[in-house]
Image (cartoon, helix red, strand yellow):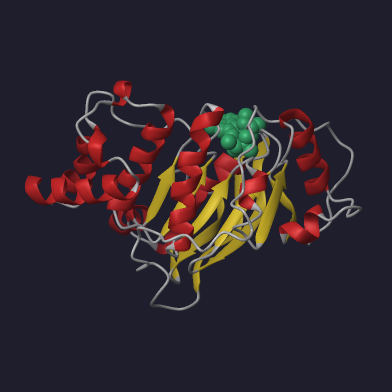
Length: 292
Ligand SMILES: Nc1ncnc2c1ncn2[C@@H]1O[C@H](COP(=O)(O)OP(=O)(O)O)[C@@H](O)[C@H]1O
Ligand SMILES: [Mg+2]
C-alpha cells in the first residue's frame, strides 16, 4: 500500500450509487453459466499497464499509473469523481493512447504494435460503459450480432447463434427481439455485456457498470459480473458498489488526481482505524447511501 497525499482539494463525492447486497457468506458457490475458458492457458500475468501518463493542455490527467492483472483476477478501481479512472481505462484500451507508458497484453506491447495489430489488441479487451452504448435502432440480438458480422466476419446465421447464446447467459433469451427503448436499464447493460463477451475478450474493463441504474436493477447486473468472475474472467472494474466488490477482489486501487495513491486488500484498506483515504472515501459513500 502506498501512502495517500492528504490535504489539497476536498474530494468530490461521486453520484449516488445505491448499495447492493453482497452474497451471504455461507451461500454455496454460484454456478456460472460461463464455461471458464478464460482462466486457463498462458502465463499468469495477463495485462500490465506501466507508467501511463496523459496530459491534456496543462492538465495532467494520468501521472505515471501502473497496474497488473493476473489471469482470472478482478481488481477494483475506486476514488473521487474526476480522479482519472475513466481516462485510465481508455488508455489501457488504447482508445486514447497514453502520452507515455505502455500496456502489455499477454506480454505483447501495444506501443510497438502496427495499426492493424492495435485493432486486434482492442478486440481482446471488452469495454463496458455506464451508459450502455447500444444502437437504439437495433434489437438486442442485432446489437450483439452486428460486431460479430462486421468485425469477425461471421455469416448471419452464425452471428445470430452466438448472439442467442450470449443473451441466454445474461438471462435475456426472451428479450432478443426487443429494442433498447423496450428494455430496462439493467437489461440494456446486460445486452452490452453480452455484446462484449461475444467478441471473446481476454479481459473486461468495466466503467461504473451500475451507476446509471435504478437501485432495484443493480443486482441483476452485479449477478452477471459475479458469474463472469466465477467463470474466471479477468476484469478491472470502476465501481462505487464497495460492499459487493470487496467480496470479489483481493485488491482495491484508490485513485485521485491522476494517480493510484493506495492499493491493498479491502480488509487492509478498510480496517477500522486504518486511517486510509480509501476507508475515509468509503465511509462517505456509506454516509450518503446507508452502507458501502
Ligand atoms: N478529453 C479531455 N480533455 C480535457 N480534460 C479531460 C478530458 N477527459 C477527461 N478530462 C478531465 O480529466 C479528469 C479525469 O476525468 P475522468 O477520467 O473522467 O475521471 P473519473 O472517471 O475518475 O471521474 C477530469 O478532470 C476531467 O474533466
Ligand atoms: Mg469516470
